[in-house]
Structure formats: structure tokens, C-alpha cells
Length: 130
Image (tube, rainbow, N blue to C red; front, top):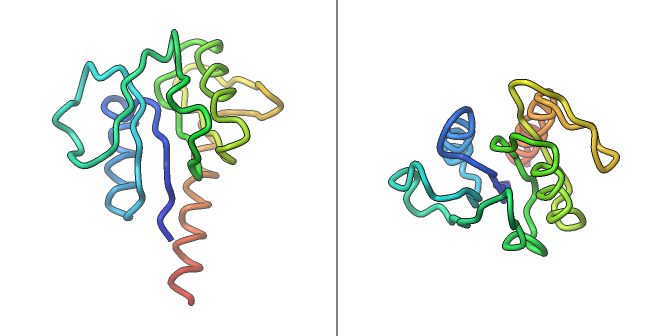
């Protein structure tokens, strides 16, 4: 079944490709970004415009199956988003090209993306079997 995903970033870097693949697979997406790039990309996808370095309260209390964060540059910004979705988003994946961070008792790394994609594949596989 389709997943409801929050993508922090999503219009540049690897996030753009993650969004393209997720849409092709039928997942529901919400993009959280500053709204400074890629405004013409992904028509019909919900967008939350916010400066994650200051305030991510717009996602607090929202429920998603997973959050994929590809735009966090500093640990405090990743932590702010992770804390905002804690309790309502069971899977948080931080993608970084230069660091691996351990926070809030969860090891977040590029390898976590594999876990998220494996969950997606497993759900799609079980859907096909029924």
C-alpha cells in the first residue's frame, strides 16, 4: 500500500530523485522546504514552506509513515525536525554526504535510507501477494 512520506528538501540533490521514485510508486508526499527552488516540480504534491533552521512547527503533530531528511546541514537542524515529528512519525531517515549523526537514541545515516526503501519494497511485495 502507498506510504505517506514527509520529505525535507526534495527539489535538489538526491531528494529530487527520491521524490520522483516515490511518486512513480504511488506514495503520497509532502515536501518541507524553503520554497526557493523547484517550485515548478511535482505539481499536485503538498508543500510546506518553512525555514527549518528557525521553525518546523508546521509539521508538529502531523502523521506520516516516514520522514526522509535530505536537507539537514547541521545537527541542531536535524534534531529540531526529528523532535518535531517524534511520536507521530515512526521512521526518520537522515541522508548526509558528509556525516553520520546519532541522536534521540536513533542512529541516522545514509544506510537508513536502505531501511526505508526496504520497508517500502516489503509493503509493496506483501500487497502484491494478497
